[in-house]
Amino acid sequence: MGGFSHLHHNVSPEQQALLRNHNFSLRPLSTVGHLTLGGVIFLTWLPIIAFLFTVLILIQTDFRYFNEQEVTLIHAIGIVVLLAYPTIALGVLIFGIIATRVHSNIRWSAVVYWTWWPFFRLVMCCLAVVLGTALGNYLWYHQFLRYTQLQRLQAYQNIDPYRASGVRLQDAGIATFNRNATVDRLRTGCTTDGATYCIAPIVPNGKISLARDLFMVGVDCCACPGEFRCGDWNVPGELGGMRVVDDHDRQFYRVAAEKWSATYGPKLRHPIFLRWETEPLDALRELQERGRRLLALGLLAAPGLFYLLAVALNGLLGLLVELGHVAPVEVPAPTQGVGGQEWGPGTPKEPLQWGAAPPDPKYVCL
Picture 1: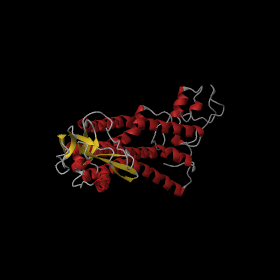
Picture 2 (picture 1 turned 30 degrees about the vertical axis):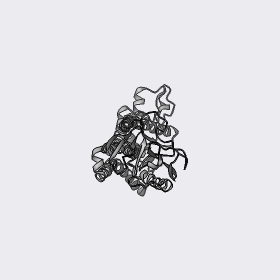
Picture 3 (picture 1 turned 60 degrees about the vertical axis):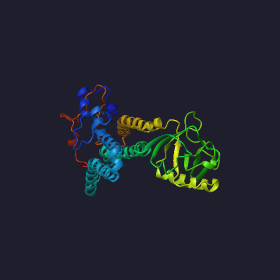
Picture 4 (picture 1 turned 90 degrees about the vertical axis):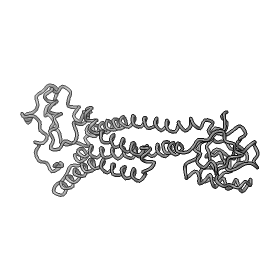
């Protein structure tokens, strides 16, 4: 894929070495199309570090739970530090190009060539920060934060909904009910705000008049109003649930509960909202385990992603060189071909040095 691969047929090894020589005045990248493993590591180690940092700092469960602002500050400072080097490197290069342009003409194909890797290395670092931050926050808010909040609450078993109320169960994280408890899936409440927030009362012995302020809830799993089909409604097993700890969702469930109370009469004091789970302890553990699986997948996939991106960018640069759209300098072509014949009378006797070419204002002087 090299920029001069079309000259390699029937060219002696010495002549190939001369063509591949890269003694430029500035060498931010190796010969186009000859990206080695070391070159890939050099191009991708910083994006990989940026990805790992942004993910791991955002999922420090115990630290972030108590120190949200400190984690945000550390995350921001880390990003600034990680992006400083590629940003400065590209900035210095662009400054040199601008300074050269002020005093002489430049060749834009050379500008593209020399800024290719500094620019795309910065792009890869920014992409790593965005992906790492997105994954870290997703894992935190959807998996690890919920797990931590529920773990810090209490677990109640064999609850009698006739005797227990929301006031007594204020610190409940997971709950299972006795055999007398049922969910009235027909006399439900709901509210809509883009999504439909559904609630159904947990009642003793199927009597709505004895309902307190305990509800099973879900999103987009009922007609409004209509039959409640949320969570494990059709899974055999004991009645249980996990507490809704998301403040955003609880606001809408509270509105739905107030509408339900206005329709069916029981006054609400401290409504408790649960997601229907026949095995709430297993569901709680699954929150953490799923978070760990997604984290492991992200940590394994990121290096491969940046490796493939570096190889693809190198291939694109090589293609642009082949097409003549970008180039560091022009190659002096042989006067009589290269098929086993001698180079022309103008061929230099010393090793080919790109930096030794005659001054030409078309090129960037870096």
